[in-house]
Amino acid sequence: MGFWLAFLICCAGVAALFYLDRDPSTRISRTLWLPVIWLWIIGSRPVSAWLEVWFGLGQQASGGSLDAQLDGSPADAIVLAGLLAGGIVILFRRKTQTSALLKASVPLLLYFGYCLASVSWSPYPSVAFKRWIKAIGDLVMVLLIVTGTNPIAALRHLFSRVGFILLPASVLLIRYSPLGRGYDLDFKPMNTGVTTNKNTLGLITFVIALGAVWNVRTLLRNRHVPNRSRRLLAQGALLAFGLAVLGMANSATSILCFTLGTALMVVAGLRWVRRRSSRMHTAVLAIALSVGVGMAFGADEAIIHALGRKTDLTGRTQIWKTVIPMARNPIVGTGFESFWNASSARLHQFTGVDAPMFKNLVSAHNGYIDVYLNLGWVGVCLIALILISSYWRAGQAFQRNPEIAGLMLAYIVTAAIYSITEAGFRMLTPTWIFLVLAAVTASGVAHGIVNTNPLRPRGARANRLSGPETNRILGLRSMQERS
Image (cartoon, rainbow, N blue to C red; front, side, top):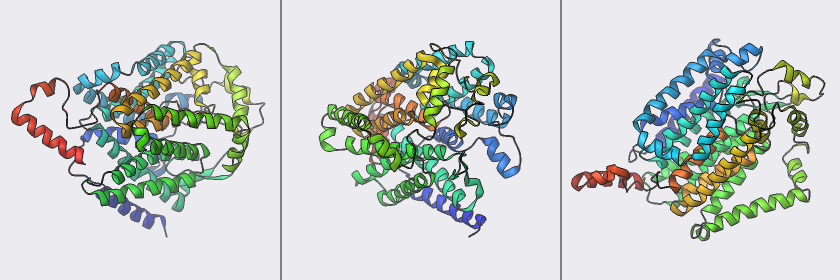
């Protein structure tokens, strides 16, 4: 089968999935398309890369001279700036709920505030500031999702709209185009799909696949959901694509995180756990202790070999030993997203190291070490604060809505684990975006800001409504709840 015939079949299949997954009983704001487009870009390739591939236009800034890397692509800057500006305008109209969510997310505000302050001691302050603006875009897109009238339904549609495009397209490119395949630094073939690397393909796949698992479980548990059968078929197909692409990507960390995240959601959904939230913490602690004991007795080596990896984590341990002593300032770091700027004085130190992993190195393949190099111990402590506080808020949210809390808990725990062997806390990466989403959502649910029960109007608007107006809104939200 040729590529263009496969492309037409793929387009027809994607259209069928969107048709099967439609839900006329639930109204979703059109503003959800902004974070969907944002994730399409973050979860695949920059706009400039697609323009270069399909039309021969644009120029990727991922390689080449230092000036090219620091300046970036005008096409990428215009698209991301447009999405960011549109999101800020919408959030200004929702300023009451946005303000309440930000006040409930103090650790995130402290982290972004410190990142902004670190721009002042970056060797490239203008570049660091531009990257900080892009990082704010991640937070803006999260707030667009959570501040909607029905954030739970918005989440469900987010997974579908992102996954229905990226996952089938990855299978298409891997099977029928050289664009979806490549070679790693050891010149071994790898499947990249819509991304440029098997690890990034595994990353976007596992975060979307977790959402598909959540959707499938919800539909299986609620037998009275309108159009349940066809929607279950669509979500089942999305989950099948996710499992297939995870296998094609062969990213050990992503497979492990997907498995762990799914297990956490299943445990959170058990009846005996739902009755008492403390049992959820016990289950998480048991998993952590099991992993710790296993590593103490060498089980980690057996797992690594079973996943087809070396005990040195494919050269990562050598990278960590090399780059940690190169920290410019152990306390405050080099500056936000500044350590891996192609500084010749720093990167030339890798010349004497005989390892393929040091070729074109742009991260330490460890989120905590990357934060340390860029933001020092202060940044590492703030990341730890985000993880701990988010986990605590997810536990509080479990008392209000175990279903959504289980999903948020899965994203928090998997982000912490994924960042052990990959750069999981960097801006414009799916793990970081979904960690921010989990932190904001968990805080909002725990404080009662995010209404997981659309039957109840909140705030001053609820006090102003009475009589027929109340009945009309309650009737509409009742339809949304049944969906």
